[in-house]
Amino acid sequence: MPRVITMTTADDTLQPFQLENHAAQGRLVRLGDAMHQVLAAHDYPPEVATLLGEAQVIAALMSGTLKFDGVLSIQVKGEGPVSMLLVDVTTGGDMRGYARFDPEKLMAVSDKEAGGPQQEVPRLLGSGYFALTVDQGEDTQPYQGIVPLEGATLAECAHGYLRQSAQLDAALKVSVSQVDGAEGSAWRGGGIMVQKSAFSGFQSIDGEATDADFDDAWRRAVIFLGSSTNEELLDASLHPHDLLFRLFSEDGVRVFDPSSFAMKCRCSADRVQNVLVSFPRDEIESMKIGNEVVATCEFCNVDYRFDADQIETIFRESVSG
Ligand SMILES: [Zn+2]
Image (cartoon, rainbow, N blue to C red; front, top):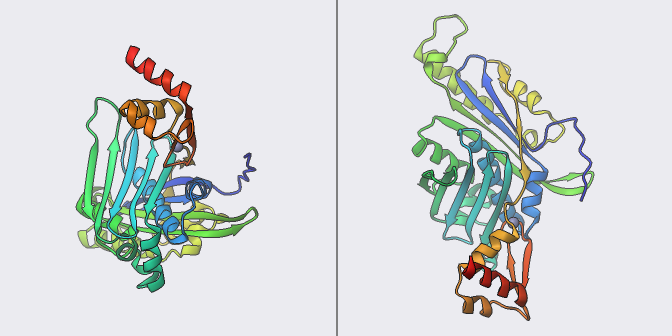
């Protein structure tokens, strides 16, 4: 479907920034369409969509933290009603994701409403882990960091990951919601993250930089970040620059070139065929519904259909090739 994009504000964007005193650097993420298309591809209950959207914002923020050429993915696994969240983002900003959940278990906790959205992780995911993987392609060793799911919200779990696994002094704030717009209700997300810079670059106002000044400046940055509201993070009409200047005006902020995100799945008929031929032939036969095998991409929900003749061809070619 063609979309009319108004260029008044930057959307689906990653905006890197640095405080003028060099105490902290960070990035702001805005996700509009790139989030809505991921969340609307499946019929998720709102609380599951919200969690998946938060994982998207976190993946976007983290993708700005690491220098990589490939795919960064966030995988969250739990023993609760939501058993998995998976989001990946490429260096070029292609994003996709999906969630797995058990509708009956979800209904049971929804009835109780124990803790509400402030306790989404214990309530919806339960115990499990938060993992970040960077895959830079063939002939490279994938990087992976894993921490247990500890925290009330996914943002708290991500913070735990940054502290324990990446050993970064960082703070982040994430917001996801359905927002009414001109084209009806759509999912939007936003987030900001700051990380403490090295002391060596720190510039104090009076010239003489001390450890105490540096720690104060860092603490201020965390407080300013915390003062951002959900409305500000989600407001498509508030330019990322304006929000950053508003939040960090006391210490000053410098913005760098932004990059963009789009929902784009990397699935293809070829890839699905490669998966099909990895199964024993009789198992493929048992997957047939009527005369065809339908394989659905978990990410984008697109169906790949193969009729009996096509399956015959795929297997013949895989044997001869
Ligand atoms: Zn797909």
